[in-house]
Length: 117
Image (cartoon, rainbow, N blue to C red; front, side, top):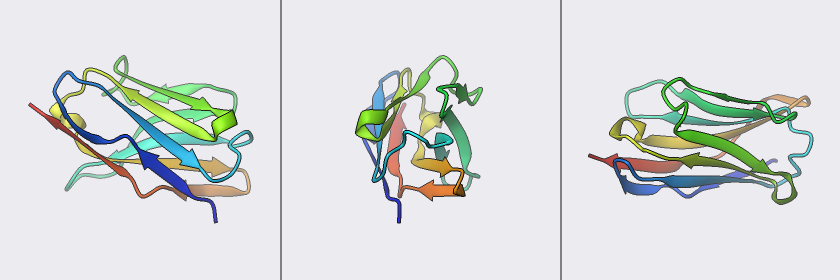
């Protein structure tokens, strides 16, 4: 069973920054896509940012210019740098990893991000 463990969440004031990490229990060298999602209470899960095997990135319009997804293949870890945080960014942030042999992917348990106004 592949395990993903998110960390780095917390409470921050509006305008602040956080860096989330997602550590994967196996090599991510051949992962098709890794992504960060978020889910706020009463809302649907939203895709925030993704990075493909080739390094292409994609962002939700709501975070473009503020969030950056990156990866360290040697550490089997994906990051989400979040700057200029807003109260509406408050959510549980979850990491997902998808391989060809596991198209549905694997999920971490999430890390809470709370942005106060």
